[in-house]
Image: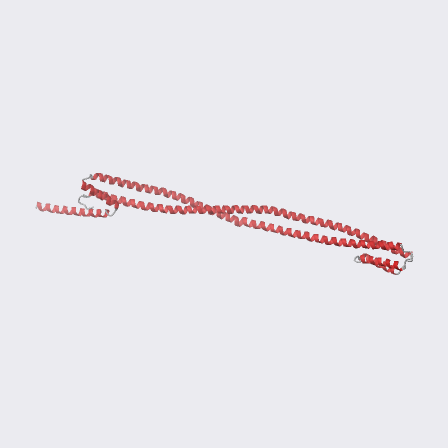
Length: 358
């Protein structure tokens, strides 16, 4: 009876041992599919077959697990540092892009709403003043032309008056020689009167007097000295009137010249004032144009700054994405390696590798 019980216990223990060995073999087979697990198990098998001290291997595996955990902690720490650096750089570059956008927009607003309209306004004012100058010079030309025409008319009038005076003097000289005039002398005198009439024909105020003299002279044989005296008095009256007309025309010409010179002086002063305003506005226009160029240069620089900041931001995001992928891959690998090592470590401590096939 005791023997039977011992046999049953032996069979049961053998079955349990066999089952445990089968389960351990499954773990070994699973770990052998990993490089790190294969390395550890092969070392364990080597220790088992060579009679090595298993505790040395256990201590080495424990140290290895700790090193891998330390490495994982370092990877986590370095990634945290890199993340902080990324966040700082990302914030910096994003702020630089936003600042550049603000500067570019403000520059555009200043150009569109202030400087460009002001430049056009100043150009318009200058063109308006140039038009005023052209109109001013046109007035000068017109005033000069009128003055020249008036002066030509004055000279022609004076010439006619002088001819009339000369003809009158000839007639008076002829009358002074008439005592018993011949028919030829009488005709010559009458011709002088007609010559006078021809000279003063345009001047109606003297025309009546000359016609009366012609009529009187045509009816006389100039033998009556009283009649001759009347004619001489009338001729002298006419001559004095013509001389007065010459003096009046000369005085009027002098006044017209003064008026013309005053008018030209006024127009020249207006022209100079227009030019002064053009010069002043041109200085303002040049200053405005210079500001426009400064704003355009600033705008271009800020656009370049923005492009640089955006490029750096994009590059930083790409690099951080790469670093994150590297971190993730390395972290996962370390976690897997630690897990495999811990499983292998557990087997090393609990399994007799002399009975396990590696």
